[in-house]
Amino acid sequence: MIALIIGGCSTTANGVAIPATTTPTAERSSDPSNTNTPTKHGAPKVTVPLDVSTFLAQPCATLSPTQLRELNLPAQGEPDTDSAIAKNVGPGCMWTNSVAGNTVGVSFISGNPHGLDDLYRGHEQGQFDGYWIETTVEGYPAVFHDATDGRRSGQCNIAIGASDTLAFRIGEHGELKEKSCDRAKLIASAVVQTLKGGR
Image 1 (cartoon, rainbow, N blue to C red):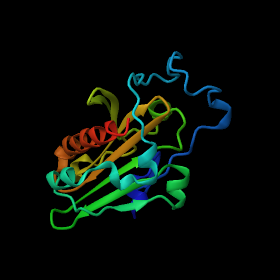
Image 2: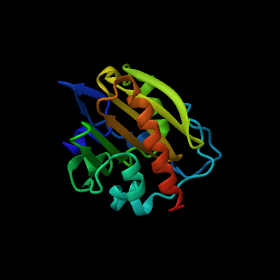
Image 3: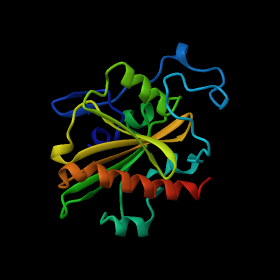
Image 4: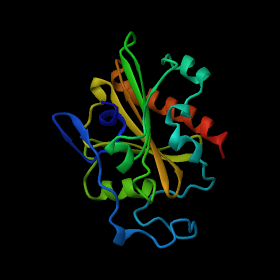
């Protein structure tokens, strides 16, 4: 279940997100660390990259105990580092508060070698017809997006550029309906603060 909530998506089947395919090898830059090259599909550049290397193996550490309490989430998350989704799309963690009726997922989209620009490519191809809203989180480029619009039912996704070669996604699913995106952005801000400590 965790992969269905926090994995990358390009289409849906029966309301369940299907993982996006990674960029074909032929499209990959020979030097993905070259920050002087403009992004191919229009994603904003990340001027101060975040070091997420520690968190790829420990995705549940992206939210501290204090942050989890403030967000009314359980102290223990459910990590996903070994499933097919985790290995092909990226690792993540899910927290579920059954009393409050909400689930939060944090996932690294490590299967996309161009960070947010791969999502911008998907947007150009019509993969995110549900909604596409560009924004920023703590000064980092971000975008609310999904293939279908589930915001009225309390489901919202936001992806944030940690670097020009890696993005991470927050998925919020709960009882907040249209305000689910506000909470997703709040959680994204908390994750950025945590990741800054690993810079």
